[in-house]
Image (cartoon, rainbow, N blue to C red; front, side):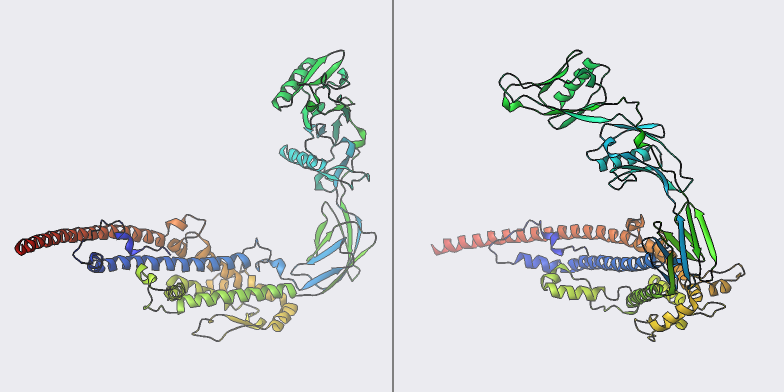
Length: 604
């Protein structure tokens, strides 16, 4: 709540104090009491609006959270998802290889799964020795340079580069590659035999020659051996004092010039000289042991065009070949480019090829959906109870927002208790909240056409509190709910998410075929989710334009302007009174001075 102190209007007054004994501050405060009361009343009206806006926004937060949790189909726990209404679970005797998940229509059965093959992408492995920063690799005809401080980073960077070129191949560095040696595995992101074949070429094998420096005398700080002319080739890498430089240029002289420029730019005081006979020599700019440096050169011992055969022996993609046999001996054979498929409302997932048949045992299990429904009802009860409190509890008019003077006379705990009383009942009989609450209660009383299914029939019964704040809430008999789910889960699902069929033409027919959650979805979406709903226009939804353009925010702003103008007027009136009393003070001082003079004259 915004707090505006009523004393601020006089804080900058020019005040006068004299010898007359008059309490000017008290006189001014008493004279301005009537106008100060008017200012305080406007502040209180603004404060009440801010309280109402806060309470309205709490309603929006609670109802939108409820909608997102149980009605938004993007949430895995949403009761709007048909897949959550399942009464069967399956246990695998080899969970690492094959698992099964029941959908809502699944029946209890036992399955045997035989896996001939699993869907795999086309792939190839590049030997560890070839994964060197600076090497180039050609994939699908496009050349990429290997970059990174580690082999794992090189693989990550290559994957990003492939994606940038629109190539559906992923690179990963692993110590468990297909040829039992460490290496980088390239895999198509497409599974199955349709996974496109691809080739890769790594240009040049990189080897590192470490070049020694002399011990650092007063006469020389150069390498004891030169870099042979044949190694001064564009693309080779040289490392000086731990910093890597790539050799660039059309010939040895140009490479030498470019390297010196790079060394200078890096602040490394080493000079390179080159001639076609001796090759390249590195020398420290300054003499002495303190100027020693280290260097190594990574030299490609194969020509850039050489294709390394060991790195391109790839594996073609394969389709999955899986046979599922039910308890009746009926078989279903799946062949395809995925390792997940659905049979009889059971989703089978093969994670790896097992060495033998895998058995999946089905059993009745409604725990998951039962728990979801119980949480839904409990959260609904909490929300409805809070909404009932908002519209059923009447505000005590003896409690208005405190003024600054009132707060100064109270302790913090007293202020807190008072503020709670002020907030209570501010939304009493509010038409918007009442409408939302009534529509939700009506939806929960649904009776489904045909089955006659209701919440009461599955163990969710209304609480008998017709005039209290728990009106419209429910009690749960979990045993009865479990029984209904085990024996009649399709009708339970229909009760919650049923939709009208094509034969429903009248509103009454459509209503009798619409499930509870679909009714709640329709009501809550129009009332609290849309940014142009009546409540959103009144108080605003955070994250939308309505948050600052709503009716209450505009009214609060209008009050702020009015309060500011009234406080300026109050300050002007106070200043006028202080000036008036200053003049009186001055006149009385003159009178007292004259009186003293006369008394003194007569006495003499």
